[in-house]
Structure formats: C-alpha cells, structure tokens
Image (cartoon, rainbow, N blue to C red; front, side, top):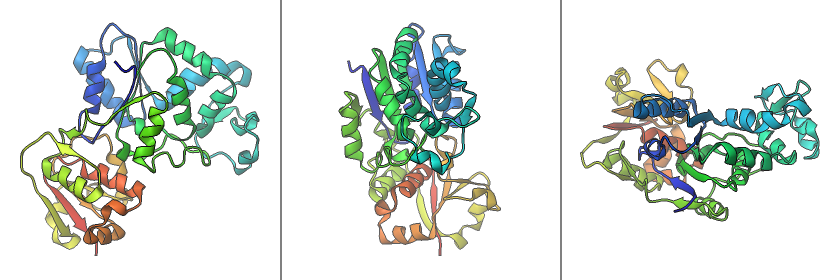
Length: 336
C-alpha cells in the first residue's frame, strides 16, 4: 500500500466522500482544507457519518495549520508573533536577503501570509513539525490539494517526509485560487499537467488519476462538453439525458428571471440585477440543478471557433468549475 498518495479527481466524483470513508475511530487524523465551503462540508459530513466530531479527527483550515500548528508553537517567544499580515508585503522586502527576518515579519510582529512557509523553512523548524506530526497523528489528509502554491507547496513536500500516511486529494483543473504566491516561487507549477504529476512522483508520492475519473454530479452531456471543448478528460457515472443549450443573452429572459436557475458569470456577480455567482466562487458547491453559464465576450469568440481549450488556463479552470456545478440542464449564454 502506498503511504503517500495524491488522487487527482474530476468535479463531482466524490473527493469529499473518499476522505470521509478513509476516516475511522482508531487512527489519529489531521485534515487540512483551504476554502470555507469545503471546511464546512467536511465537518458536516464527518458529523453525519459518526454522529459527532470524534476526538481523533482534527480539521484545520490551511492558514490555521501553517500558523497555529506549524509556526506559532516553535517561533512565538523568540519572535513575539502576533498573527498574520494578510496584505501584500511591501516592495522593499523583496530586496532583503532570504535569511533577513524583516522579509517575513512586520514591525508589528505579524507574519506576511505568503511567506509563513518560507519562514518556517529558514528558521529550521521543519524537523520539529515533522516530529510533532509523528507524535500526534497517524494520517495526514489535504483536500483541495490543487490550491497549494508558492512556498506552501514546498512546505507540504518537506512535511511529506514524516513517517505517517498521507492522502492528498484535488482536481488539477480546479486550480482557481492559490494559498499564496511570492515572486517566481512555483509560479509555473500548474502550467503543465504532466510536469506537475512528475514533480509529485519525484517526491515519492503515488499519483492516482483513475479512481475518481467519473463524476456523480454531472450528467453525460456536461462531461462530454467539458471533454470535447475544454480538453479536460471527464466521464459520468450517470446515464440519464440532459440538455446543453447555447443561446444568446437576449433570448433567455425567462431563465434570467428564474431564481431557481443560478447564473454563473466570470466576475462582478454582485453588480448584476439577477441572482448570480462568479465562476470561481462556486467551487465546492454541490446544490445546483439547472445552471446558466454566461460567457465573456472573448469566451464567446473562442466558443464560436471551437477553441475554448486554448483560452488562458486560469479562465478555462474557472469555466470548468462553473460548468461542472450542473446536475441537470445547462444554458451556455453567448455575449454579442
């Protein structure tokens, strides 16, 4: 059995279900996730399975993990840490040497959020964290693994050397957020699927691309559209027939006025007169039946040319997230 495993899934294939089914009442589990949506979902589903949150299962959001679990216990007294600085670090800090603590800590003793992991590394704290993990846990799980970026990815790779079981679960093409970025560190991590897999394999992490290839959420029509148009391989566990309709914006006033059909737009959903969400913001949500995905003007051009798979990867990933929320029919709306 592989003690270190990354399962690359497709949307709606049961990532959270797999995580929940991995849990038991004998081993000690630490579960890390990034978005608030997934944190709440995991807590709810653990409580549903066991009737409560068992004491042997700890669930942390990512920054609670790297600050409260990793950094603060070992570095608090020496550096008088007072929390996390959530804005971008001042420009002058980029010119400071990596061993200069001013590169990582504000005058108010706050750690720059995107350099916490690097600070942990340069202070020699990683061996202490590994020792802590091995002492208190048997199993280390990260959901939404595709959101790791910058120094945070490097930190997790280093912690993966601990002597415990690791399960990482994510969807490469749902990389729409990044835990942090700092200069050029891992800036190209998600540019190439094959190189990404190879990098994980070089860390002795087994990469599984088959177990969660079929979506329980999305019908065959949606999976086929995503595979054919976005170039993201995706299959469905379902056999029922649903419809994808490509229409113009001025042809669907009835859909726009129907609050039971969520409208998914590229951005600025809060400025629209109808109920809508941004493409990237609906990640982790699983309660949409019919959807209405409104294309951008440039996206409409690519749609008409049959060239969606070549749009900017960050935009393509957000469009994939939006389309894959659909359980029923989907209206894809062209912009003039």
